[in-house]
Length: 596
Image (tube, rainbow, N blue to C red; front, top):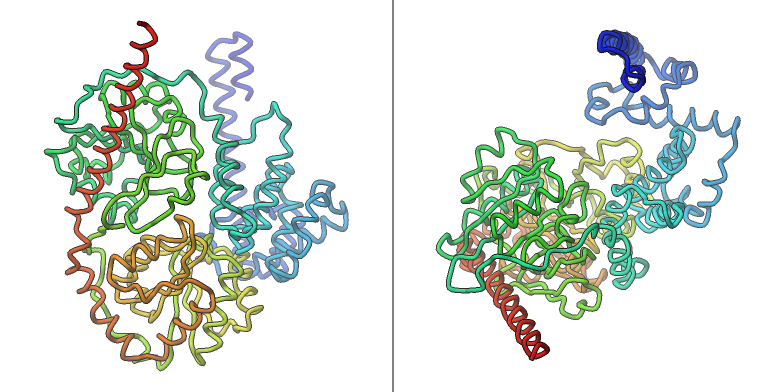
């Protein structure tokens, strides 16, 4: 700060350098003291931790300390939530609840009972340990959504977004997280109409210029189409198993494939440049430069794979740099983004009735819903664990923010009807003590003691896949089904029971199990879900059959073919391109008529 002031005042570089050096020395000294104090906390009992909290305001350290670090410090991990609650209680007595928190009462009226004492103490600590009220509201909303209370969390998000006056723009991260979470709330509360309106409302800001209207692309179909994919997660584990295979399978005599990678350049993505003919590193590239690159490449069909996330290319999409623009893969409802022409929906998912709730034209891909190969990541299929354990182990290995309290209560009904069974849940959020406490409380409210739960946090991908060796039956989430997770389970010999709905995100499981030849695993109601899960748990021969045959059935299924999948993708792109040419020619014809 001092250096910037000196520069602004026109001081010479020598003085500026002295100020910078002093700043770094000060920060280094502060960092050394900070590390020393934190190390002392790590080796202290709870009483000392709380004393440090009172003396040095280390409740902020306790609030933000990464779960990966907590895992290596059992004392702090064990007492983290208690310490937070202690600090919050002290501050509450001194200050009393702030007005903005009192205003949230309608959204939070029963949250104390739904979360349980431990998790609710953490929520209260957020009120007093985050200085700026909007940041505190965001953290509360996120915590509720990550603890199974999506509708309550969304209500807090709505209060947060409404706190901005008309000429004040909320931070984009708040908006995209809110839009994502809408898909995970109760369909009765977060209706199709509401999801559509909110996406359209908050996506209008992406249009920050005049869209392109003229293109140099040849208006022909008897050539290779230029397909551009934009993605910021091309090297993660999900992309490795699915996107890589799709990109590799494209027929080079039909399409010319470009990948616009918004990941930082690293050895991982350099090693996979050969997946496509043209690799473009676009990390950090601004919207105008990105659009000019797409136009220079003369992309015919631009496919946005990111969805509403922390990073996306919606600002570019709104300017329409390519004649045809498509939303695909990582988002299961409308994007609401101006100039997005199509939402490409995988085969087996029927949502034509939802067209009024899509700003894009829904385009149903013909054929199969997926074609993920059995890669070297997958370990051998094990024997059914119930044979060794003597009890059934149900599981859920998907992302925990998909898991609602209502879903857990449904799982509990299954567990209560299968005596001695256990539930194995593995997700990153279970490494967070407060979220973990909330999930344990939901199971307790459903009548399932913690002794019947196996709860694990994040791990590397290889370890995750080996966890299927310890599971007999998967229980899916609703309203947002598992996608890649259901395929991984099938390849591992673990059948997943799924509840199906009318939305895209609620039909993913149906599309997967039907394409693999197991339609009996889908359910149309909660009652059928319970019945099928209990029946399968009691049918040990059927479980053994699934275990021994699912991977072989998957690998030998002619419907699960990368070649067929790539062909259906390319057919969709060609049909979209033909529609574009037809519209262009129609406009040209109308212009001629008006001119004459």
